[in-house]
Image 1 (cartoon, helix red, strand yellow):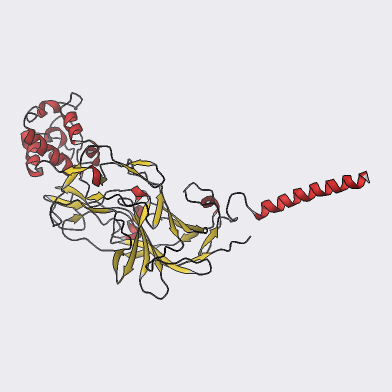
Image 2 (tube, rainbow, N blue to C red):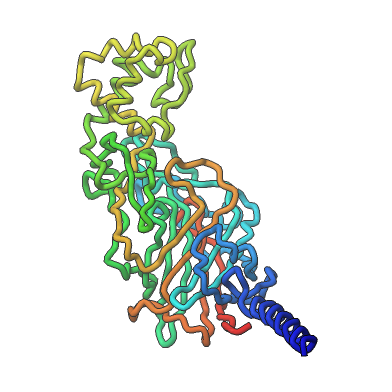
Length: 430
């Protein structure tokens, strides 16, 4: 009898261990169904019950993926008068990523509420500028526009997803870019109809920083010198570099006359002696003060820039030349306006969108202090399976969806990409 109880106890223990092992097999501890991490012909979204909403979430290391072969989609396009050096993908793949293979990879997943799509691609260039205002800026190799006065120059990197909608010729579009959406970890939710984009959301991201109505009007505002911080939906704070970003709450009227400042720089204070005409760094004298037509000068507030110029740390004999104008406030204001102009005043004012954006987009781009080199972009899109809006695709795990992607490198009218891609959903069952 005792032996029988003993064997029964052992049996129950072994059964419990076996059941536990089976349970672990049925419910993967990572919170998502197992993947092989292999390449697939079409994009397959696997199911997870623990949200994988970060670039560092473990699912993205294990997920199956699609290697997208991109081709030229739109090339050879130029902007109107006054918009220069903004077509970095003019020759398509020959320009994008300096002609090297961008190696575009897409992964996907879903839970009960959202669809998640991660895109990775190689691109060594990174530019957060978007239509920055430049005074007497560089010429454009593709255009004959005069560069005298104010022109809009530089552009941003863009990524677009375009989903087909059943029974409609309109496309549901998610647009992410470095200059206007990356700071907020969001993407624009658009509709493409008859080759025209319309914004589906009431949440705007930017407006033009312009003093008039023409492409050569020049900027209306500059940075007010206060620390530019935004608070994201998760409560974290993000600091934005004023060399690239001008937030609506941190702007002030652009002070000084840039044309007069040109004369102050090149003639009255004779800054060109050390810094070259137009601040290009090609010195007329024996002292090479370096180039000033880079964005770094806009990291200074107006007061900070004036203080540095007049300080003893100003290289060479700069403080002596400063003595020619330091007691003339008008000339000082004009000079700083000129320095702003040759460095590039942000061309747009960012409008902090509400946190209810329909498409979130987390990226590995550091928007606090922009780096000029970037090896691999990573952008994770997150959107509800059903937003409740007729303009948006409703994602259902029992259907297949056709989509395409577009990529541009410092451009918005020329792009590479791929069409006729498909998205499917894997079963929730093991």
